[in-house]
Length: 125
Image 1 (cartoon, rainbow, N blue to C red):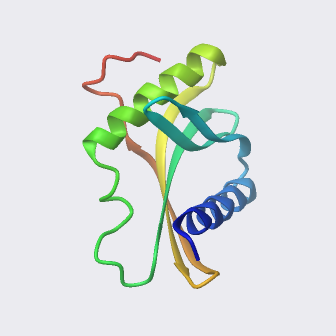
Image 2 (tube, rainbow, N blue to C red):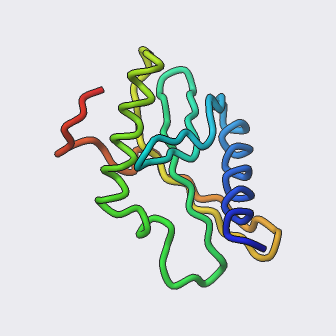
C-alpha cells in the first residue's frame, strides 16, 4: 500500500472518530503553499486543526514526535490563512491524532486535544 493511501485511510479513521465524538468535519486536506492541514473540525466550542500521523505497530517513532516545532509553525501559519478566509467565533485549537494501522486494518486512534499552542508565533487568532 502506498504512503498516500495509508495516510488517507488514517485520516478517514480520524474523521470517523471525530464524528462519533460530536465533531463536524468542516474540511479535509486544506493546502496552501508551504502547508497543509489534514482535518478541520468543529464541536460548537472549538475549531480543531488536526494533524494526523499514521504508523505501523511497534514503529520506532511516535506520531506525536513527528510534529516538530517546524511542523507546528507551518500548521499555525496554514491555520491563520484558513481563519482569515473563514471568520469564526470558535476558539482555534491544534490537535494531533495518531493512528496505528496494520495492513489495511486500523488498530487504534489516539487523539490529543490542544497538543500545542501558538505561543511564540507571530499569528494571532
